[in-house]
Length: 187
Image 1 (tube, rainbow, N blue to C red):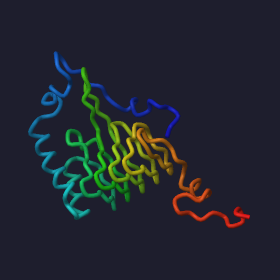
Image 2 (cartoon, rainbow, N blue to C red):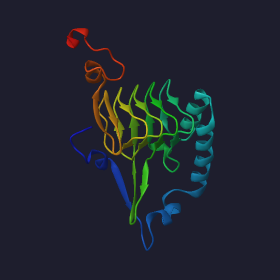
Image 3 (cartoon, rainbow, N blue to C red):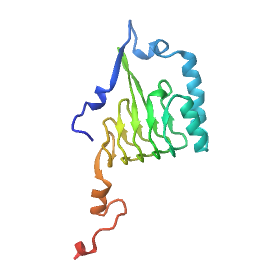
Image 4 (spheres, rainbow, N blue to C red):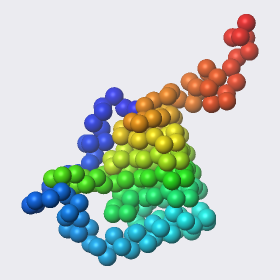
């Protein structure tokens, strides 16, 4: 994770909403209802299709930037309101039931932000990425984690909120992730 806890907030745009009620009450002013309805149907197809090729094609129709060889798990959900703010680089994996959010509706405003998943990054089952988050190349997000900050390249994060667990090289050196330790160190 980066030292700057607010780095994702620097990439999130706030959109104040007028009048009484929370910002979700004004969603039709934020995005055209027909656009959201079409997105919803296409996202539903992305979630249930077993074909990775079809999923990538459908996600590109939503305006997402999807690299070569991206694997998108069953029931994984891209943002329905702003899927066009999602970039998934080559050979990344988004696991079963993961959720990629590019918006957040708050009391007096809603916020939008691009989410970038780097090349060969892995997003675990049930993980949630918040708007403005960048997951670096080769980084891993553990299952059921809530990613509220950027994940540097090669880093593994886990938990709610997600916290660093070290790089793959560091974990292998201490025998985590099924890596072998140096037999000489056992003496």
